[in-house]
Image (cartoon, rainbow, N blue to C red):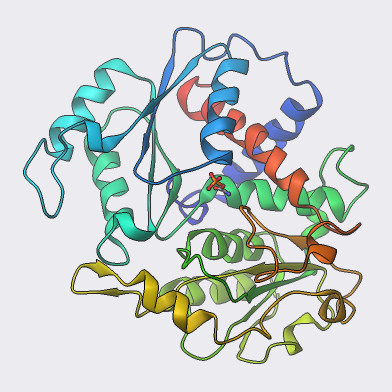
Length: 337
Ligand code: CP
């Protein structure tokens, strides 16, 4: 599971369907991962992903093991060490699944993280699951559509109905901020939202365009389901008629240069656009839109407190859904469920 775009719509439906059942009947799947271990390579920090995978493995009767790659003498672009070919094959003899997080300052160029995950997938005989890398964040994307389809149906206490997403408008809008974030979460949201028939609008200031290939795939997904796709550099136009508003800071395409992540330059550049914040005034232009964000939130930059903590914010339900979709992914890939 490196990107939801690699999976068929039917397979994604299976994940969401099982995640919905696991959410409602949380402790009835407690032996699916009996005697099974999920290794987690975290190159970067995490709150939700680490905790939700650990809880997910526990609730399925298995074990999730946290591993810091810097403690493992692995070969990198800059240092000698054990190759992916060797590490992947050895890990496959111990564990039943392997998750990897690698993004932001832990890569020297956009796409290096993706390359590493695909290299592990090539050499492993166990499932490889992205826990967020520089291009995609599939577990987040699945939790997003699960949350949106709950909110746009009868509410998070009821089963999701992802058919309700068809024809709804998703606005993915850049927010200013000091975190210089990777493109993974927003790109995954665009891809999976468009797979579920949503109209997608991407808004950002000039100079902050996302990966052209992902924009093209999103457009193709929209065309397939007769949905609309548009991009804009206007700060408010995209809000008009939006059912789901997703504001998030992301780095510019110039963030990497000569193998270096230029974080300070990115921060200085981004803070020049204070008008790019999701606030109540802009949300009033939407179609009674819900507010979504993968978290952690840079409050006061990406979104106002009033919106993030407001009655139409689905952030905590989406965060909770990480647990349920990851249990479903592990059950389907590691336990042969
Ligand atoms: N959304 C998300 O992946 O959160 P963490 O970075 O805390 O894991």
